[in-house]
Image 1 (cartoon, rainbow, N blue to C red):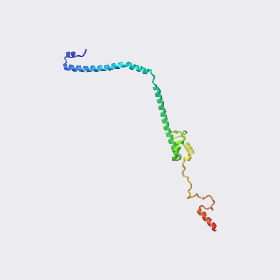
Image 2 (tube, rainbow, N blue to C red):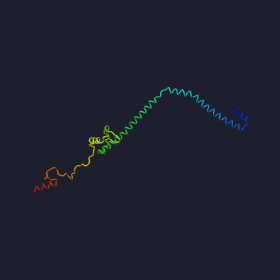
Image 3 (tube, rainbow, N blue to C red):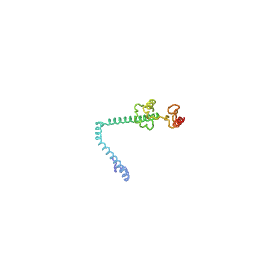
Image 4 (cartoon, helix red, strand yellow):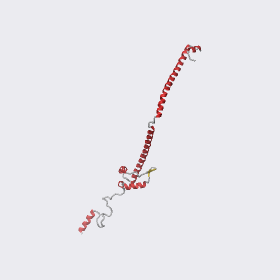
Length: 187
C-alpha cells in the first residue's frame, strides 16, 4: 500500500499535514534510493575487484619476502656492528686508562693508541682480562714513552761527593787546585 494524498485524506488528515507527511516521506525515500544506488554501483564493481584480487593472488609476491629477509639481515648486521663498536670503544677507553696508569706520557697517549694492537686484549665485566700481564707488556713495549720520575742528574753546582774520582790528595775544585799548586811552588 502506497502512501498517497488520497489515502491520507481518507484518514481525515488536514491538507497542511498531508503536505508535511508527503515531504518527509519523499526525503526518506530519496535517501534510501541514493543509498541503494551506491550499493548497486559497488555491487557492479565487485566482479572487477574480485578479478584484481584473483590476479594478485596468482602473481608472485614481487619479492617482498626476499626484501623483508634482506632488510632483516641488514638490521641484524647493523645491530652486531653497533654492539662491536660499543665494545671497541669500551676496550679503547680501558686500554687508554691502563696506559695512563702504567705511566705513558700523556702527550704520547694518542700516538700510542693509534698504533696499539688491541686484538689480544679482551674485556670482561668492564675490566681488561689479565690487566697485570697487559700492564707489564705495555711497560716493556712502550718503555720509551713512559715518564720516569724521581731520578735526575746531579747539578753542576753540587757535584757528587767523592769529587772527580781521584785520590784524597787531589783537589776537589779549581780554587783548591790553585791553592795547592801555589803552596807547592812556594815551599
